[in-house]
Amino acid sequence: MTYAVVTFGCRVNQADSFEIEERLRVRGGVEAPLDEADLVVVNTCTVTGAADQGARNLIRRVSRRNASARIVVTGCYATRGAGELAALPGVVSVMPNAEKDALVDAFWPHHDDEGHCGTPLGPGVMGRTAFPLRVQTGCDERCAFCVIPSTRGASRSTPVGDVLADVERLAASGYKELWIVGVHLGSYGRDLRPAASLVELLRLLDRAPGDVAFRISSLEPMDCSRDIVDLVAESGRFAPHLHLPLQHGSDRILATMRRPYSVAHYRRLVEDIRSRMPHASIGTDIIVGVPGESEADARESERVIASLPLSYLHVFPYSDRPGTEAAAMTPKVSPGTVKRRAARLRDLGARLSSSFVLAQLGTVRPGLTIDDGTTVLTDNFLKVAVSPGLTRNTRVNVRIDEGSPRLVGSVV
Image 1 (cartoon, helix red, strand yellow):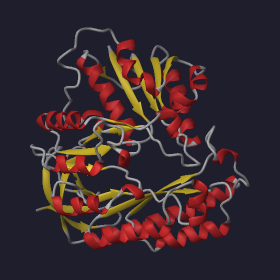
Image 2: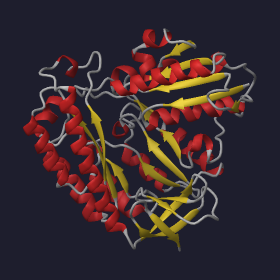
Image 3: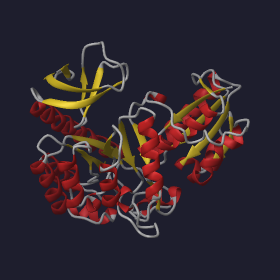
Image 4: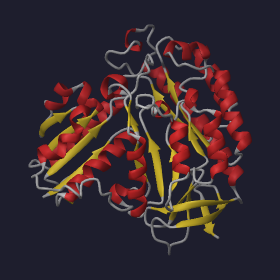
């Protein structure tokens, strides 16, 4: 039998999809195009209205082109809006996040795969050279705009010993880079008994055997401690790349969003990172159009962001999420205004990215070949085109020679 897995949203969802695909392959499943697969798993996101719409459009498209497919929908949208998804053509089941682990048992002929389940597949599965290793899920924070605590539940951490065992298995399978991911990664270990912490886990990973490096996924600003910055700067095993969601550059709007830090705190953090690691990539998320955001708030946010040592922006137009505090807030910002403000921020993000790239020209960075071997993902999160001849998952040093219209480099 054949299958296809489609993933929307965050790296935690990507990690969940990896696990689903591993179990399908262990049971003899063969990956196939969406138009031909017997089973199509759609792992959804619901962080924005656009994410919901994207999942619905994909499901309708699969149903039209592959009428015999059994479509199973899971993920955060499946948790929040099961009825909406169940009504779509071709959908045979909607499984919320709490039931995601049972999906393969429910929809693939079962046999005794004990001893195989959990054995990771090698680099290249689902088009990924690096492996997203989920160490935490769920969130106990209550940001006014975010629906994820209700779709992922309370914060839950993978025990330290299990994480280290996963790292050992993945390294043995050939992975050379692991992304450490979680919904609220900074809360790692608070629910464990005895309690642990993210920095304790990272220190253990730093000492883990095997030829594997680590990249920390999205980390909330209040959780990025000086100890974590020091470890990334000094270790040599952690990529100099930190994604720290600011969400807005106005303290007034941050308070409205119930974000537990100030712009001044964020500025001190990223400037400290830049001073410790001048070559580091520092990315952020920005939401535009939160209810009550004035033109002055938007302009203040743009001024703040332009003054920060950021390498790239992810810009998200705000959309009401059912059940959140922000959904009841007024006044709403008109769609046209949201679109214009988002466009300005994306233009700003392009300028920040260009400035970061220019600063890297002529430098030599360690990296890993991805895709067909003609692209190197550097430690500081740049994709650099190189000449053919290398295979995927090869460690190299690359000199960045050109930065426009695309990054081009030479392996040295």
